[in-house]
Image (cartoon, rainbow, N blue to C red; front, side):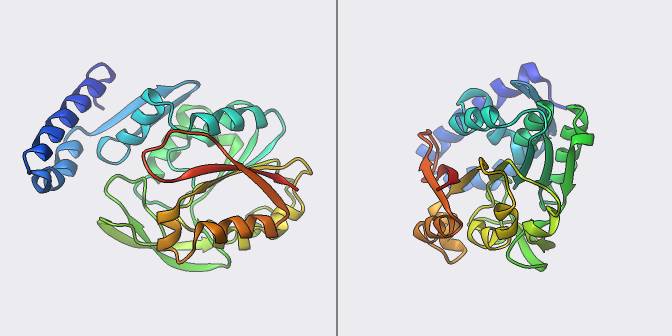
Length: 270
């Protein structure tokens, strides 16, 4: 693994060089070289508050640096942390490297985590083990949707935009299994849900109606509303809002700084 002491300064230097090259009109060269250069740096491990996250530098370093240096998802994380605790049942839909899942489990919650990305899964499993939360997290290695089946999963070079709906710049695709959330929550009374599935939120909500009906009266759900990702999935932000309201939920936007046009919503029963 890359040294924790050297990694972040080295990445900052590489980004400054890339910025200068783009100003010189060499953006295409930067894009062609980026993944190869970052892959040469191998893997990393970084502590983010209570949680240790490891990953591939090329795929995951930007996300983890944003968590560490820019308080990425900070408002969502703080509200999520307030909602979880001993005995709570948590669904982490779109678990990625496991930041939210590991944090909830460390605080005594029982977690069902959904993640289909074959590039990310080895690091997610490692992170659950390193943080000592394997026994509190049940990992469902499937995408979520309205019904059981299979689908094409498109993988992006940076890992963050990987989705059932092809993002710009996707560099590979695999077939993954798809499950409704309701299929994996029988007998559970869910307290907290966090969902970030890059445009598949509307379909996911159709597959979790029973879960929400049987959830705690005080259930709280955190959902990303990403207009560009929703558009790729054939939906609009308004359709997502309408789907939440149809399930008896009211919501507010969390005031966060983000690099894109997305916003996280916190939802509760009307």
